[in-house]
Length: 63
Image (cartoon, rainbow, N blue to C red; front, side, top):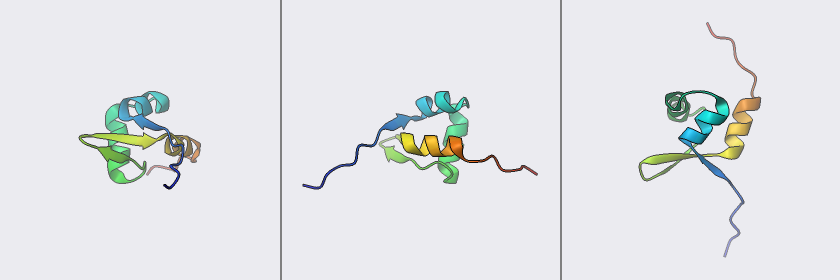
C-alpha cells in the first residue's frame, strides 16, 4: 500500500482566520486558482502548506 503524505487540510473559515481576510476572499482565491484546494462534497479544503506559501509570496502591484 502506498504511503500517504502527512498533509494537513484547513477549512475555508480557518484559512480566512489565518490570512485575516473574509471567507469570500478565500473562495475567490480558490476559484481563481491562486490558492489550491480540494473539494470534499460541498466544501473546500486547502492544504496548510499552500496557505503558508501564499503568505510568503510577495504582494504584486495593483493597477
